[in-house]
Image 1: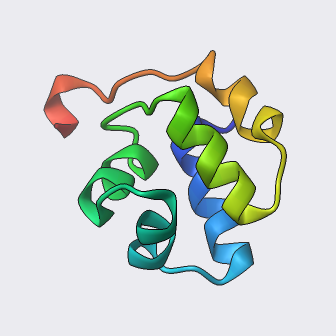
Image 2: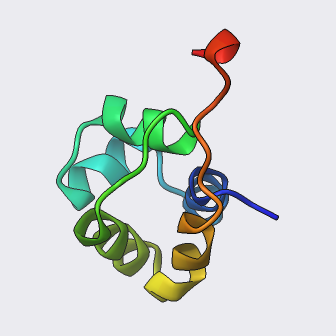
Length: 77
């Protein structure tokens, strides 16, 4: 099963956005988006909804992944 960050990255690539462009449009920093995609950080429902809208997908496409969010092990931080 995909994690939220992996899904965001997958759909971002399909839409042809760079991290910087998607972050700018969603109202967050590129660094924040990078941490979300890598699984180092979760995100608010507001940001998740904005990202989904920009990517042209329903928030529920990414929302199921929230339930399986797990921070990376200490050794990968």
